Length: 344
Image (tube, rainbow, N blue to C red; front, side, top):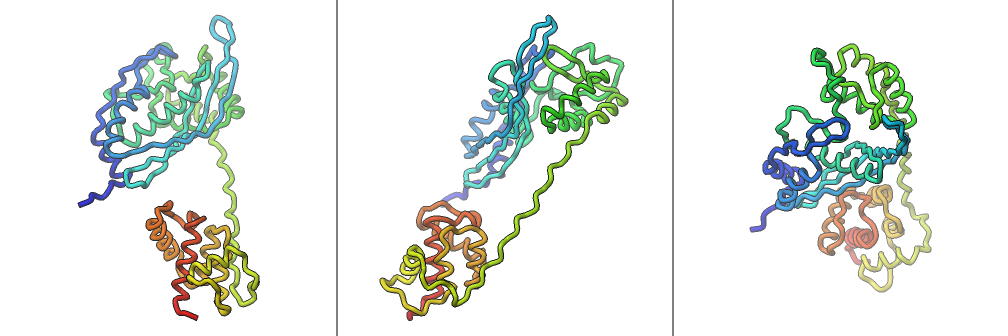
């Protein structure tokens, strides 16, 4: 008896059950010493469960890198690179289905590793959130989020640290800005005494008091949402009449012959079927128009395409606009042959 393959969500649940807590075992001295979980820890923890349950993660990154000069405490200038990107992940399960997720990430480096840092951060955050991977630490200080100095953390002050929801929301607003718009905002925060200039860049003076947090929120504007383009008008299905051109293209004639399994075509063929045959580039609108002309549903077209694709070992379509090429030809022939089963 063949077992049914797990869906991607079922496989991820099984992976989550087998992944233990990943402790913050690494220590960095960059921007203040603190512990963190590295990308190697995540890859090592997930390698075997992903193979066991047939999970595949495919990334695609889109972003840009910004170069800037910074002045160290000793007065020396150096170049830094900051990569900002959206990393899109498509996660496949053993049954072939998938889910999509997007993580925004930044990476800062004085060499060529800013992009790699950003992608590593994105992957870690995706896995931490997707699989709910716990840590043995009470707070989560990621390597890309610098820990404030002891001087910036007065013990008597109870305010908003880097894990507070208000600061996290502000940080996401800063990340959403492009580099040119973010520069004057950071400048205003430095002037207001809410950020400090260090050799490693401008960093927040965390934790903030309630009053300071309110000032920060006032100085960091909400991003202006991009205008949503109006949907493209859908062309109405062309009317199928007897006025269609009698001179049909070669591919339409061959499709009709294949559908009827004849060497010569009869003369009295319904124009609706010629319309279906003449579609050279078949997209969603064409299929809907053809289905309407032949009085069949889009679901019937897709079901027939899946059946034919399975028998012919072609790519299995998920939508109407996935039907193309050889599969489109076979589907057209299928419907014409079925509708014109009566001999002339």
